[in-house]
Image (cartoon, rainbow, N blue to C red):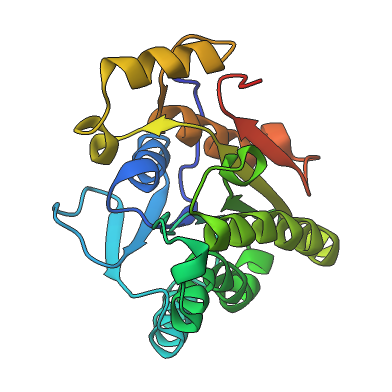
Length: 242
């Protein structure tokens, strides 16, 4: 695939869920564009790269989250972009779901988006034209099974995005969301069959598998000057599923 040219030299970007999958693709794209990337995840099984700082944090632990991101804000008082990407698509039948599991699914998929944005808000304001990119999903629009809590959280991200766009626009902070479709990452490759790929091609207008890099290119654009008048929007990247 061709890669668009962006220049984020001298700019700091925070990416959550950056150890693997879509988050890794986003972190890699920003590094390639010259950004200093603060990569946050539960754990990392790869070495830091040039321009990257890895920080381990359980984002469902609010006390640890607040300590971690207060430290990030103190060390990086001028942040250009925040990509809220971390989450879990754990499938739990609704009838079997406990109250604790429900709260955990919302915490790990939605609540930390709001709190991290709040903690980094002074640094984003200092960035004078910063951007927040929230990772939603097209799954809640397509009604995939056994994902009720996940659907609630991912739909909630859309409401959060629009509310933040209104509240932060006066500070020239743009807030948008990406709703990916079926993205094929290293995690999914082992379980993907030829039939599943063929079904994906039939569902999409574009008969090509979506890669993490495709989502990363959208995140780069949303954080760039090319999208300077775009806020409160949800960009669906699903190959044109109908």
